[in-house]
Length: 410
Image: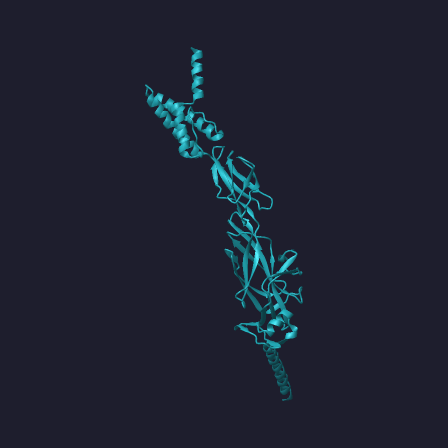
């Protein structure tokens, strides 16, 4: 009987200890005003501190001390803008190696998993300016967001109540659109920002759960050069050319500035042009077959490249052959003899003449016909017409050479 009573006593003591521990956790901790940062303390005295709990957000009454329970956090807006502070070491290598971080004007007082009081603030770390992506036709950039414990900047401590933050602003999209921060100093979430049109800088709103106003931060824009709708392919072997327009992204340029151009296959009308707010223009001529990369660069601007494929000139050959054949038929109709062999001879000669005239004209810009031709842009109709005219009227230089040979033989 004594043994049974002894074990019962031990069980009773253990049960009392467990319930006392639970009650202590439910009671939380008393946070005195003197234990708070000065800026936070002033707002507590003015009734500007909020309590965030699973039940929602409410305002803390003016009081010299606050009871903070597990799962609750006190928070106050302690400024209007983000401020740069000296960079503190963090455990997360993804935070980069920049010289500064930016502290957001929100101060949190909460409990960690061990019910110890903590004071921490959200911080963001820029990862360079937003850069223009040719594939996306957008500016793309990122920044890191985390929580910094100003008292213990090197210790990673898990929060008793996580911090939820959303994003908004002038960007086309932000990924992710919200984050949940659970650990101080070591947890750094990467936020990616996408914007199709931006000048100089882009505003992003960082909005904590307790303050819908949030705070705006400005991400710089790296100005970039851009090719305006370049052709994906043209006909090779020098048959076809293209007009390239170089514009700007991320800044509105008032004065013109020089841009250096280069190409690894084919030729450019000029290796340097001046680009203004309306852009700059350069003409390109194909050479051979395969991809050609055109590059543009200027001091202080993000360079840009575009690739144009030089393809077999099937369209050119088809138009020239058809034009030469039709011109040869038309020339044979004017002759007195209309036998099959005569028509075939006219068609063959017309095809050859049409090909020569079109290749010389569209390849090197020399007109072999006896009348003025001014075709500014390559197109199938122009090739067909030139080949037909060459077949019908011949090439003056060749006709003169044939006459001279005929006179010599006589």
